[in-house]
Amino acid sequence: ETMPKIVVVQGANMNWLVKRQPEHYVSTSAAELDAMIRRHAQAKGYEVDIFYTNTEGAAIDRIYQAVEAGVDALVMNPAGFTFNGYALADTVRSTRIPYVEVHVSNLYARYPKEMTSIPGPTAQCVIMGLGVQGYILGLEAALHLISQKAG
Image 1: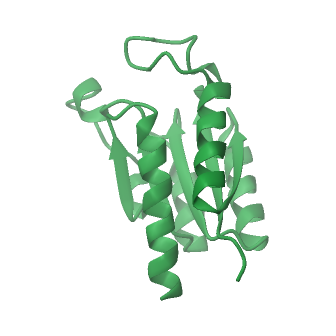
Image 2: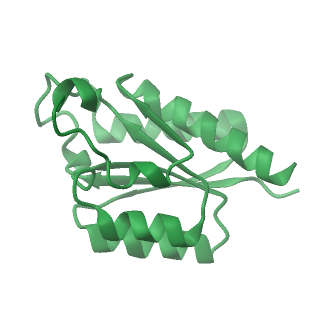
């Protein structure tokens, strides 16, 4: 039996995790978050690929590449693509890959009037407001979706 494979896509501005708006984000750097994700993958027995991009097209290309390579699930923080990522949403919809959306902060609290995640409706699950711990829960959700699909 092969190990499940999950791709984690980090959208616009996530590479600056500690440096920008610390009131909304945690004191965890991108490198620390990556290490946390890799430790979880090792402990739970799955392969993980983490990809950061500030351009929507690169995120789309990476998702298609992952699906063609047989990745089992997508965990993505669309970040800066949340409010206008129509092409990104179409990609997830067309690939039909199990998708868990993660946001570090509670977007409903930050944007109470205009909160609409464009990629959100393509997700089986959305986790927000739990800081970087949301990634661990998102990965657990992805593993659950993979096991449901396999079962």
